[in-house]
Length: 212
Image 1 (cartoon, one colour):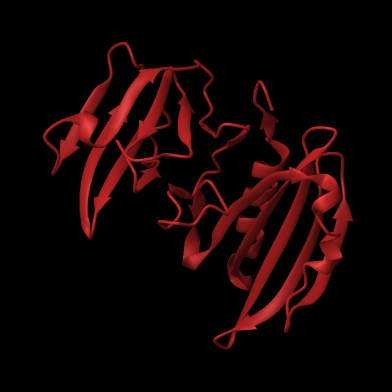
Image 2 (image 1 turned 90 degrees about the vertical axis):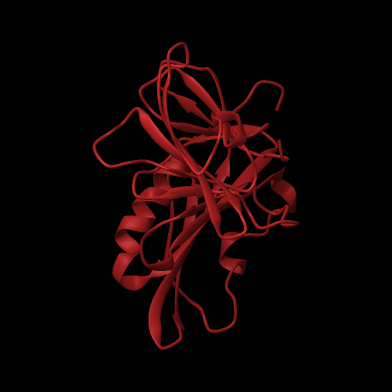
């Protein structure tokens, strides 16, 4: 099994994918997950429905489920959460969970959504080493929003990419007294409301795991 930075829990299961992987949520099937292990452009897929004690697994281009995913017992919570060693977050609807590219250790996973939109997390790192969000402005970007609420501070930026209006937002979450996470989302402006809501869900749902 390849090195994995994240796993999925909920609906009585813990799903540990084989890298490189994608998790997808089929429509109208809240307790079911489609797990794909990529071998180049070849997809080896297991569609898993819990609970773990008696899972239903449908395979495509895989001889066994263990080639794609390990299915263990997990929490009965009726919400899918993405777990890493230091923290967990809720999985927003409309987004796949993908392993980062080989060699990329800046984020434990990526969330891909409509029209090339992406949400990713960086950290945890010491809060005193994270610059103010208003300094996250890259050349060509303009601040169009800045706010603070109980769960996070956020800044939203506007910019052009290939002649199309885009939005990027950064959310700073202080989830211990000394550690913070930055949740970043970017998308075409036409999809920014949906992507912003998803990023806010991720930011509000951050939980430190035991030992962090």
